[in-house]
Length: 251
Image 1 (cartoon, rainbow, N blue to C red):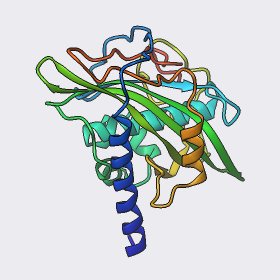
Image 2: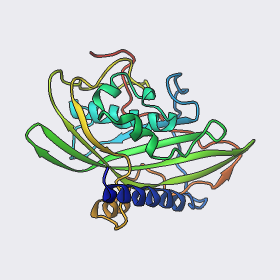
Image 3: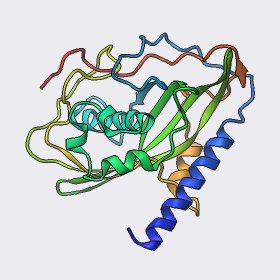
């Protein structure tokens, strides 16, 4: 990895941490009314009780093959990052990921630990895409809210700062399934097909703010809460996953 790349990564990481800290300063006024989420399954890190909600739009079909692949990879990366190991990803994640996926999930700092677990919901929506032959880049906007346990009987609740997420992938061989919506929080089986991610940026922020960062910050969907209570004696509950997963593998 070159010196310029290392400097960009270090700067980006610092920017993410700063932005997330700023996002935690939301006041206590407007709150969402979460739909109840099912209990977390056993195959997610104990410190990361976070559900995922995908908002439909014109960039890609959430319910199509692209949607299945992108959802599975992005969710897997979040779980792997929280658990500090690629093994926490969904079945087939490591085969669909770049060869350095182990280093990637450890590079980005995790905000939760076993002593300071997190509970919440992450929201994703498509921002833009680039297509070239069998190669595609999809830029997402990530939003969310999180309750972090700070002590016995005390939780700090905050909004995650909006940020772009970039995923580049190539299509080949077996296709991912489509219409995988369901009530499960994680898929039961491999839903990646033979597609492969060539590059993934969990937090595409840079020292100089980009147009994508501005666009994500300016276009928070109505479903994403704008304010939450700052401190409570219990976590703000996560919303039900949407569209969720089938309870059995479609492949």
